[in-house]
Length: 314
Image (cartoon, rainbow, N blue to C red; front, side):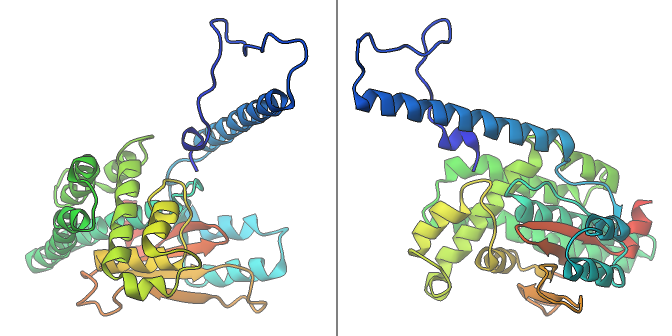
């Protein structure tokens, strides 16, 4: 989780040095407290250094990368991972890396959904008016889900005042997909601003996920490893930088009405053939006319790109 949420503020004197107790022989409690404070300070510094290194070296979402890049990353890894990467190269030619900060599933879902909807509109514009109107209806259907989401969230106990700013960013990025001024390049730029639209939308998608879990709590509670739905949401869904399991992936796909296919590159198949998990509605008429395809590796998600989208973005 974000270090600012897990490290409490330290009490220092004016020159920044820790005030020592004015006693000759400190009690064991004071020694333990001071040792604990020092360890927490060291942890904070380490977390800050790690987060800064991630920000400096990894964009929120990368440019297009060839699948050969993925294969090369496993050149010295286990044979099952290498075979899996080679198997994927037979199905896909391009993918986007997503920053590994615990928000990668929500960020991949957001970026993948926006990119698919935009690319369909751009492709339809080259075909004709009928195709263009259909692509706009696909965007409208997803946009309608977003517009009506705030009321559903408040019905599950979330504060409208707290959510409004995040809701506005989410609805806004989907609305922009209908504008002629929005291009793949401008979308990529907007969704790569640090502490900007992507982060706001990621947190709002977490709330939508939690809302879906609460709406259908009896069904989802059977799949939780511990606690009830409310506890699970407060500890594993709502906080930023918390990884996603299948329960969250299913809930978000169902709330948004979007088909999500995930290729699992987890090293479990020695022959290299991967398992594909399908989340959300699989029927095109029920899935708002769009779908997102993601790559899962242990603890991380990236985005697959189809060839048509690549051609439109060139």
